[in-house]
Length: 138
Image (cartoon, rainbow, N blue to C red):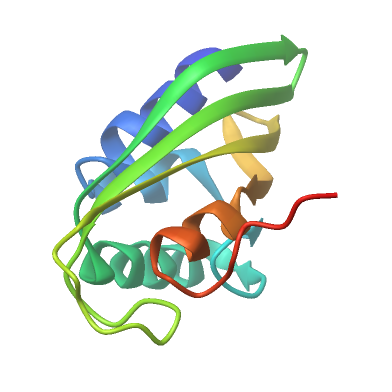
């Protein structure tokens, strides 16, 4: 698989369809992951635990690639995230509302596996949707 195909599978198969067998194929055993919603995780199982937690809090959770830039084994993706708030999330009980936000993901891929991933999401915008912060104007 090319780096583009790996990232597409990571979101379509692993995130959106929770195919954890595919996760174990395309994610390196010593994978380093830093998502916007939690602390750093290590290894495939650490990532799967994170994935399950997000899906528990956000029903019908999906990740959509809006744009991708590939440079060898490095990939940057502009992302759109969306899910229905069904469980405690940032300390807020379920609201049933659809939450959505944008983000950027930075992958390092080698030997046909994702070695590391760092995701930056618009957490302030997400928290505003949950009623946790006010919009700040400079």
